[in-house]
Image (tube, rainbow, N blue to C red; front, side, top):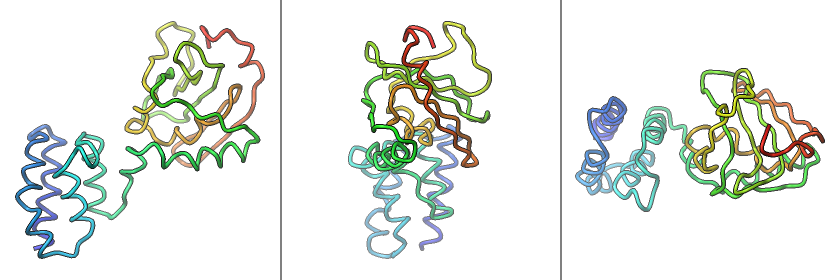
Length: 204
């Protein structure tokens, strides 16, 4: 039974990612199997996934990114859902980064904005922090060649990075004046640049 329902759940993930079904079908599957799974399986990953889908309000939202992560968990056991959905899991890593690079911990308001120009296919990721201004936390994050064009950076609410690229979040506690350069292979360079404090925050 475990293998059959788990494979059905994986197949359902693929259908969702291919836009063949929607959220309601995921929830209906969970509702129709939740009692059976509770009674007949000890597969904790499968049980947790079905409960996640059955009550979206209590658990993680059903989005394409989360469906990818549920599928990964079902197939491999690797669970990255908290990293992509729970802001609090990033607080201690932020403090560790600040301690490592002699920065005061200056946490951002996740409801405020930052400027980004990101491509998931390009490395490295560059970032810098100016002083805060007008609901913007002063962070500017980009990949590829930097540009002075006015529309190069797009404002996003910081908490959206959870789904876009949670790797960045552990650096956002660094104080104003810090720069970062990181990549997907664990390269990391962090340094202080006092010129960032002096620059007009209307420009980067």
